[in-house]
Length: 334
Image (cartoon, rainbow, N blue to C red; front, side, top):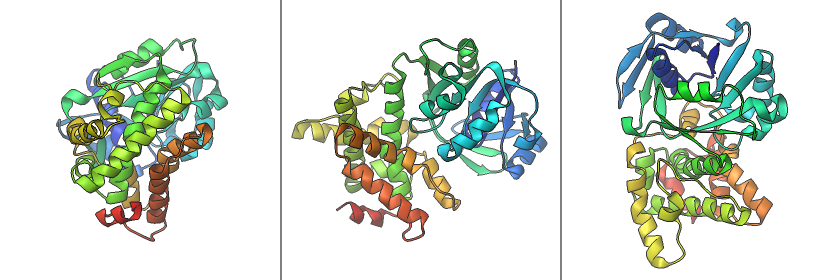
């Protein structure tokens, strides 16, 4: 059994460290030579809400060889067609790719390798790479959970093995309504990650002040509304029914929803969106696959998404260097 994490950045390095610490063999693959060299030299150093160091097997993509039974895919999905087509050549005949990407990537990957060879996983925790070989876990230790689902009704033979490996780090919920689980994560990313990138702050800082929380709440509401119109049932997150908690149709329920937002995100308050991390590194973000995915589905089902549309526009302006991430960007929502 050969297992690899392709695109082992902050999330992948931490997951790989946990799996390696449990005595399992897993290969960490990343194009960042400095990061790979640090992992080879000193192992993975995990800091933040947990702290430990762990020797890991790491190398760059040009060192790949042979076939893999399981590939955990953690790259940005802008390049999925190119990356997955390449990985197909390294995948065993009955192998599976497990995507941890944001948005709704499973269908695109399935078009390349087939439905039965694709699993989807969402994570309910966050991380930041502080320097090569050093990754910070920014979520609470009791919030390290995964939701795992299958694109095909016929589960791949490696499903149980994937679940077992993920359990080296945290609890794994097997989701029959995986599209609903995807939308749970997309709701969180569109609202909190979107505003983290727009404002240049953490999730908790976006949820705190009334003005920014108002936009977070509106983004959440748009996600809930497009799913209602599209007939998608959003799944709970870590046992919490986010629709029941955060949806509203009366002034009282809207006020309660606003009040509960900072409480709902408190275990992930220190998390800084990967989109913001990309901006800080001068890279393009995944906003079109996150807030843009909400907007696209809204257009498909005839449900307006003006706030998500605005986030997409603002982040593209930031990418072009026209403006910077800042709380001053709140005026752009007026």
